[in-house]
Image (cartoon, rainbow, N blue to C red):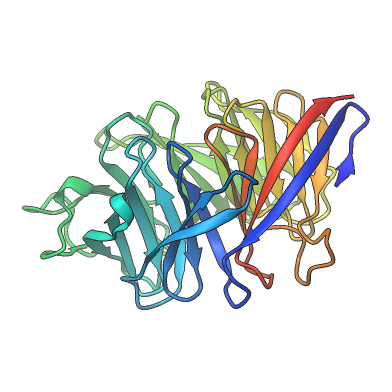
Length: 342
């Protein structure tokens, strides 16, 4: 690790996922018991943490016919897992009791969904599916069944349709879309005339107006809200991390010490720390100021591959960072961070 002058960062690294796999996505369930991993071998894999910080595989979910690109656990239902794969499907699974009950699927129009996001409202069943044709579909997962697959090509609002609304953001290019902290807005990373913007609208309103906020000098690839709902982070091709005042949607701070584009951003469970992943390393910052806490090099033990990660996710209760690694001999690295002030 690279240390700051104000903080001491000690990192314990553990690899998991085998040496013939790669991964683009990770997600913890709400209790922190399970870590979901999107695997290149067409499976979603579940791991649980051992006492020494290492991860043990407990379940393989194997309903897809192509590499899994995204995994997302429901924010409050700890065994409800959503996956998106290159077989043009989004699937729902109940992973309780070491089983894999397939709850149904949604067929997407393109090779794979660009992003999937659960509503942050407690108990909500709404899922946002971002397609690569610049559209976002709102899906009521209660209406998804294994016997009658839903499809994003079906007319929204039709009888028994799980897709209740569809939004097109053309002519903007759409990278990702997530729910606001209280769930009434959708927040998307969009690109217009080469400039990265954050686009916001009230998804439940008919003909709702969209509001766009300039953020970066290139496409925004990733965005995330802090658990306390006070901040949002954006990462883009310009190697800048933006830290926003979420209630006012204004960028109040930028982190400019990174040299390569940002692949993923994540806040810690207590909203104190902000991690951002680049190709060569992971930057860990104090969320309130952007001050460097430390740099994490996932190849610090002379492993082959890049030192950063494609997607990162903080544990919901501890300063433990799961790192999906596509350009590495191992699929996932779990980084247990011990942070103290100097």
